[in-house]
Amino acid sequence: MIKEQISRLLKLQEVDLKIIALENEKEELPQKLKQLYQQVDLTNEQVRNIEEELKQIQVGHREKELELNTKESEIKKYNAQLYQIKSNKEYSSLQTEIGGLKADSSALEDEIIALLDKIDNVSENIKEERERQQEKLKSCKEEEGYINNRLSQIDKEMEILKKEREQGLADIDKGIYAKYEKVLRGKKGAVLVCVVDHSCGGCHMELPPQVINDLSTSNKLIFCENCARILYLPQETQEVKDE
Image 1 (cartoon, one colour):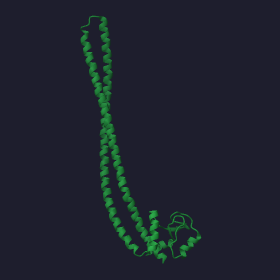
Image 2 (image 1 turned 60 degrees about the vertical axis):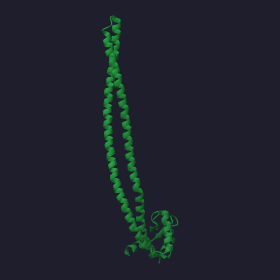
Image 3 (image 1 turned 30 degrees about the vertical axis):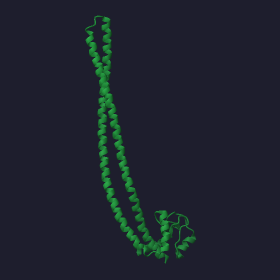
Image 4 (image 1 turned 120 degrees about the vertical axis):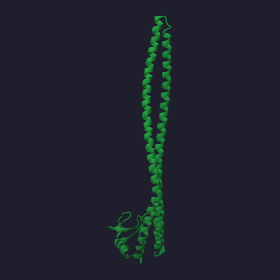
């Protein structure tokens, strides 16, 4: 009888839905791990960018130090020349030159101090980013271990379910199973759906009265004309539980 076949198909569907869920999980887990490692790569890139910024600041610091040394050498040279000058005009002019050099040196010293502060701040930033980098890498390794264990577990669970599936197929009519399998391949989800308030439990379209009548009287599979799923009545669910 068709009700017996529906009952067996419902049990088969229960197994198939578990298999589909496990297949989806098996596909998603490596993607999840890939995303985690992409975050690590992003952190690595951030660290490299900050390190490059630090190098540029250090280059600027060295250039300012060289410029300051040059200014200080010139000040020493001009100070030595002061003792050799006899003209007040030349003495005054050289004093003005020395004053300008000292002002430049003072400004350079301020810039150098600011650069040293920036070097300290960027170095601290690099340290913090490296710590975050290590934390993310550690988290990835832990997640990778969990995912690998879960993938192994999924394979074992699927092996058990596939054996259960093979056993269930023995009592299902081959022609009926072929129709079930065709819908399963297309839907990747529930093939049999219960009628709820005269509507398809899959697409929720209202069913014609004749379809409801056929479900009660016909000895063949009844399909939803809208979504092509196999329909069954609520009492057939109870019969599955009672078996």
